Length: 345
Image (cartoon, rainbow, N blue to C red; front, side, top):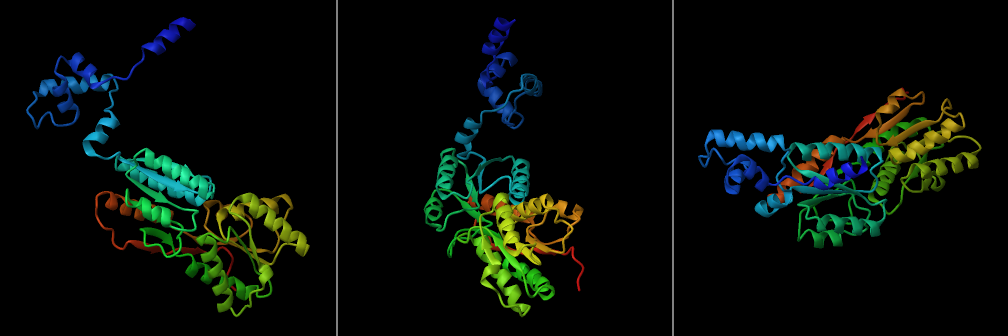
C-alpha cells in the first residue's frame, strides 16, 4: 500500500502546454494560440479550439505565471506590508485590498513587520526579490529615505502612517479632526479626569491621535495634565498592562479613557472583564471601531475609519502608478466618522 502511494506521488507532474498539444493532436504553437485566447482571431478551426480547451480543462491545465511574466514584463503581483495582520483595522484593510486584487486578476502578497524597522527592511527586500509590480506599505520607519530610493525601481504607496514631510504617494485617514471632536464632547462631561493610552510616540498614528486629544481638551476648556498621557505599544498586552497600572495607581478605574487603537482597547476590556469592571461608570472612547462594540454591555464611543475606502484609494493609486499614470491627488487624507454610543448630555 505504501509503495503504491509513493509511486503514485512520484508520477504526479504539472501538465504543460506540450502535453495538451500532444493529447489534442496539434502543434505546440496551435495549442498556445488557443489557450491564450487568440485561436479564433488567427483562424484556428472551431473544432480544434474546442478540443484543445476541453483537454486543458480535463487535465486542470494552468498557464505558467513565469511565461506570462516574461511576455508582459510584469508579475501581476502586489506587495502589502503591515505591522500586524491580527490588528482588526489592518485585517479588514487587507481583506478589502485582496478582494480588489483578486477581482482584477492580481495576486497580493502580505508581509508583517511587528513594528520592527529591521524586519520591515527584510520583508520589503523579500517582496522586491519576488518582482512585485508595486508595494503598499504601513511603515514603522522614521524616515522615508529608503522608500524614496526604492521608488526609483517600482511604485510605492504609503498608507495609515506618514514619515517626516514625505512626498511619496500617501493614503491616510485624517485622525486629528475626528479625535478632537470626540474628545471635546467627552471632556465637557469629565473635565477633571481624562486619560490617553497610546502606542509608540515615534509613530505618526500616536502623534496625530494625541494631537487630536490635546485639541479636544483645549476646545472643551480643559487643561491637560501630564500624567493623563501614557504610552506603550499597540499590542493588546500593552493596553492591559497600562490600564492595570493606572487602576492600581488610582485605586479605581479612571473616569474617562481614550485608547489610540482597537488593540489597546482590547487589552483594557480584557482587564475590565477579569476584574468585573464592565459595569463601572468609566467613559470609554477609542480610535478605530469594531462591530462587536455594539454587543457589549459597556458603551464605547469611537472614531471609525473607512477601511474599504482606504483600500480602494490605495489600489487605485498603485495600479495607476504601475501603468505609468500619475494619480491625482498624489496624497489623500480621508475623513473618518464618529460612532456615539453614550447618550449626549
